[in-house]
Length: 82
Image (tube, rainbow, N blue to C red; front, side, top):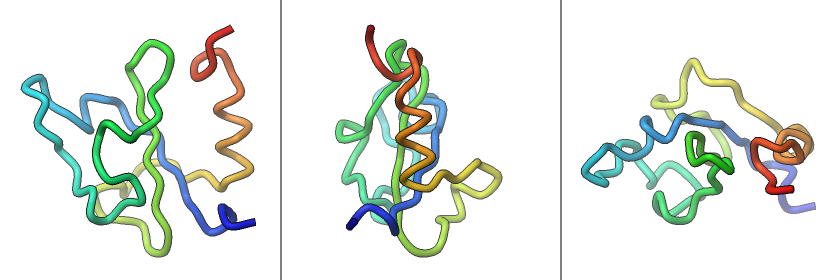
């Protein structure tokens, strides 16, 4: 499966975009092109970013999920509307 090499990190949206809508992370190091292309939690407080290869330095200290792990995580009510 092509997603097996993807790695995922959940960020608070305040780490992604500031109150003026300015992007705060380097999307050139991610598989997501910009903040509009991210998956957001139901309440909009968290965002999911993905990358391949080495972990970008701005994601250091954040938990990394495999594809199987993130699918499990996305299956809860925080990410899926009932």
